[in-house]
Length: 290
Length: 338
Ligand code: SF4
Ligand code: SF4
Image 1 (cartoon, each protein chain N blue to C red):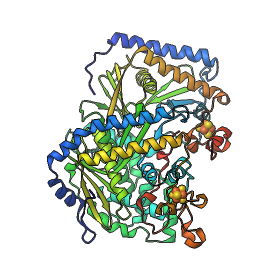
Image 2: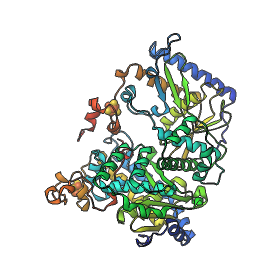
Image 3: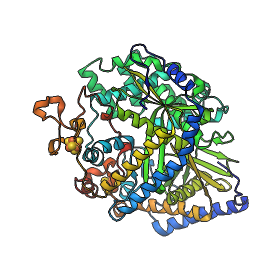
Image 4: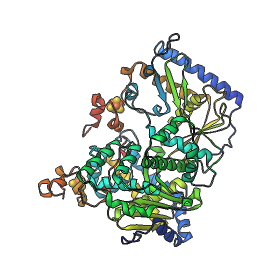
């Protein structure tokens, strides 16, 4: 995770952030018109907000995104707990001890976030061992990707942003950062996503914008590491990269604004789609011999 | 090299078996293995690209996935591989596969220092925490039929306790290689890893097997050695197959182990790409016909007819007592992504 390449100046990165925020608002006005617009002081109920998160960026079927499954959240509570514990332990890691030692040392001291404390209390001993074991595996994997680097600031909380004037919420996670939280130099995102130049730029643009939305500047770069590969790649943040993130937000929001216009893209993923029963395109794709 | 079995008689602590084996691995063996890694990656990548190019006009969009179960099936019978992986029927795991699921979780509990006083209840807790709701249902059904269905697995798992902390024991880790610019992916989930470059110790990969030792398991762990080598830049010094009733089979990783694994992987990628592009799969009958989903309609099948085989030999179902680790259940995340 070398940061040898000089990034853009703070002034420039600050100007890019302002421009990206403005462009998001303008593009939503242009594409959505009054759809999903917040009117006056009335805030619609939670269920009417459109949520766009980093999990949605690389989905292959717009139709599926346009009609979300009301019963499912993008990540299980256990996965979120596992990641949070791993990052709390990484924050206290001494550079040589095993992930298990660091985690066991940190566990009795956790008081924040309270949802982590509550979730831990609900687990019986066997379930707790399972969660700890997953957290340790995740720690080892991410440490492999960053080659044991110790100066990273691990981020437990996801960043959430309400788009000004719209009932649209954005959410993104960066797993760690270098630099000041309001103007970081590097963001690290560790996920199961494999390297893909086109998607990498979208993810980097989206995460930069959401994590820094109310900060002072976008980061110089985003590091994307893929679970299990030991590979971390660098995306230098530029106005073009930020545009990719903004464009994807606008595209996804427009699918939710007019769900029935969202195109269907069938594939192997239809097998696990909540829409399969009602989706003739998806069912036809999975027919034997199709 | 098939490795050394420590035998079923005494429960040899895994830490002892690994320590003894590591002591006898010559350092030049590891160095030799490390040196071939990048060449092997380049050659498998090349073969994957050529395979994709040959059928570019016929290949459905999407990533071609070749996890270990698919590679093993492709080596047996192409039609079996297509039936199991290209048209999975969502059938739940059979009893043998469920015991494999249970064994992995008992290992997790033993390594984590948890008691195994009520194995089925503890298994259910772990599966629930892991979000495996349908597996919970299967475990409950199996335990309703046979209350002690998993109990015999608990004793042998004791040998996993007290792994040295300085080895950084970690379970269910991922090792993945992305080939041909991400168009082909081979991923594995390793039951256990010890040591490795972060720990500044020789790496060890342990695969937990609930069935009897089989040559296919040797190929599996060799593939894992290759994937870990590509992930870490250094291959593990040892791969271990651990069987609850046969002990640990330890195999040092040399250049030859990695080369054969790379050859098998490249061959599997080539065949799977052709099958995805529409080539008719070849039929190669063998003992695997007994769990083939296509057995009832396949002219080459050697599976006994259902009426001869009894109710537990419905084609495609994992047969109780049919002792093959490859009857393992592939979870959805290993699904075909086309
Ligand atoms: S079934 Fe397939 S095509 Fe239909 S909405 Fe779901 S993912 Fe899209
Ligand atoms: S029945 Fe046997 S030969 Fe026929 S497809 Fe299945 S495994 Fe192959």
